[in-house]
Figure 1 (cartoon, rainbow, N blue to C red):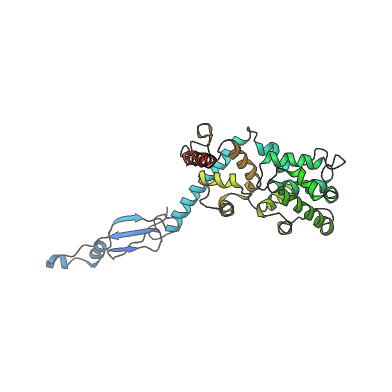
Figure 2: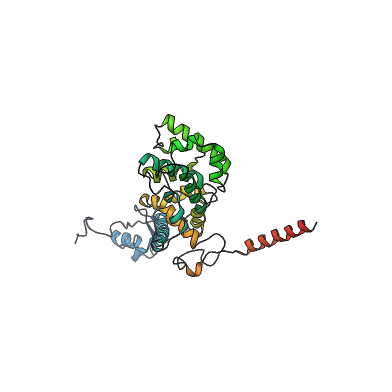
Length: 330
């Protein structure tokens, strides 16, 4: 225990006393409210000792502890981050026992079963990622199987096969992939660039991959993650964007802004696994039009549980059907 004349080890020394009516102490988190006693007018009171006067003037009547604004904000941010991270970890746990379309037909599943050459495998991952834009996973997967059949070996699709196949024949193999004519043309250009500039392999860096025809930032991050194991950011598609809003992870209007906001609070060790887990959950549980909140393991803590209004979708479908009937009757 410290003596009355020392400050070391005394937790109360940060409370300072002063003789003003209300003042702040030297510590940023303490506010003192002090009342003073006015000395009386009698000669007896005026004769009191100076020591007693000072004692009466500086006696504090209330100590009010004020939390600094910066500390309060940090506590709030930390609590909010903990709640969001708790939902993310709960989603990961739920996905362990649930097989989804992306697990069976995603980009990672599109390589040829007999592929043994690492360069060929990386090329097939690039092609599957390119085709996946604006296309559902099962359709992309089926198109990749047709492309593999163009090759004469178990390796499946290779740069040489793409270069020796006409653009028209590639287009037929890709149909009904979204924008299949354009993507057939892009595949021919990509194969030529990889052959001449990268020694038959795909680039390692995201910046170089983004220079290839048909490759945007989202697809580029998928390629670097699957082909090279590099995490260049969180992959955010429509499913991740939608769930981020519903689960309170982000408050944004575009997938790119959602990516930036997610990367501000999600620990980097979760970036690589997030997309596969969230997309699968969005495909099967938290769907766009009719989310299964009653069966969702996150419903108890989800801020949007049982609040998604699907009536607008029904109204829009009804309006479209009515317009179609009117056109047909004209």
